[in-house]
Length: 409
Image (tube, rainbow, N blue to C red; front, side, top):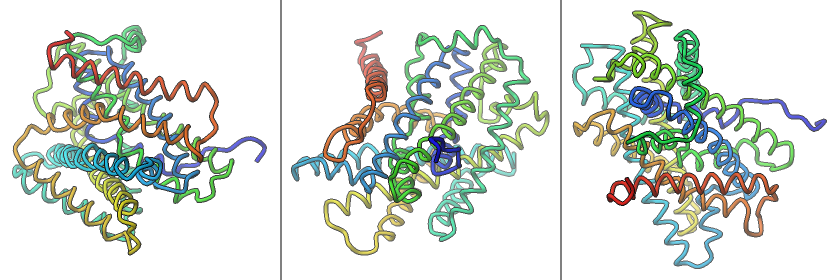
């Protein structure tokens, strides 16, 4: 192998397509609109942290030959400990993903509205259509082809944002200052939302399962391929997120333009696409929303199936359990999306919830990666980086809780 492994697209690209969804576009746009470039540091941290955590998850899945939920339960020790961890995972991820799914579907609705304008007047019909498409994709045996198509559409939108950021004439000094770790007044929730929209807890479980399937032999070459896949795909996602926030800061914050509705998001693309901006953004958002609406239930199905297998020694065909859970998550998400709650509010709330859940999942993942009989031998630098990710994420979550209680101003 000559000590080198060239980058080959793999499971991490699907993970990246999942987090470059409606939540990323909406949350990064709102962050740029409200705080200019001030929260770019949050996206940089989130990108680095995602690379570290997703690499840990992929390694655990490959080395242990287990899904992440299975590995957590297998190392819990007592029966009581396994039950507690199982309940924590179900509440934090399975239940949380139902709300997250509402944000995915709602984001796809934004794209649907941008594509069809006045013709898309019935929100219930739009939500129902997206939910049905997601269900078909989850049930269809050849869903990899559909996900590949949607990923390509998301990448088209991503390239549009990158080109727009270049053409829009970003203020380089303000851009560089944005990487200084300072939280502006009232910006804590948005900072956590930016982190939550990138470091999505369910993606860790999804990546562990996909990496185990892609590389069943956890040799040195396979681990290198997985690591390079993770670094390449997640870095691309981080650059796109930074481009979205930067264009929003340039076009909205710098010119005092407020965002009054989803259609205003298309203003970011006008320097590049002109009158076709709503069509381009609508296509990308619809694809991004539908992709995420597929991956979130899929990951939830994997998590619940792994828990059921560990607790109840499920030996029959597990595919039906995974599918039932996945379809249930789609239905719950659709109901929430139809409820009348603000579309943008759903997306931002879902991202903030993921930011608060991150420390719990990260601590468990760190324990699996570096402790126990199947622990991965790691350098002190990598261990320190993992601990730093956990500490910073925990501090951000604690500050939000303290502020909500009036303890920390």
